[in-house]
Amino acid sequence: MVTPVEAAVSAAFAAQKAVRGESVTYNDGTTSASITAVRGQTTWEPKQSPIDGTWIEERSADWLIEASDLSGAPAAGHTITDESGQKYKVLPFGDAELVFRWHDRGRTVYRVFSKDRA
Image 1 (tube, helix red, strand yellow):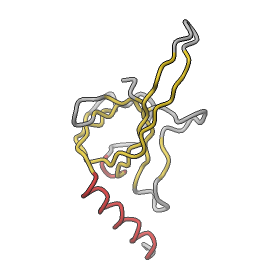
Image 2: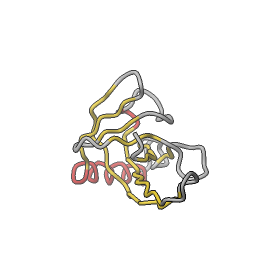
Image 3: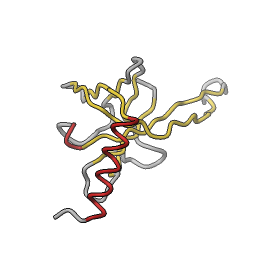
């Protein structure tokens, strides 16, 4: 049974998807699916190269994706291609090994972590 709070969270995500959603292609290495996802926070993480000491900026983005839009759970190495053709590789966030977290208590929306290293 869906609680009133879960129903409100679902309605809020539907509104976000309608207003801020963008068409992306999700590829799990075997199949590709054209879906609507909501881009979350994008950050630049400056890191120093261990090889020559130059500074490299790495762009990361979170994607809110309905679980029902994917054939399985997100995994490292999957790719998300946005409307401009920019590819993002699904990778763990920080030192954690998780490539996604649940966005809602009802486990209907993934927050997928990615970087533009694809």
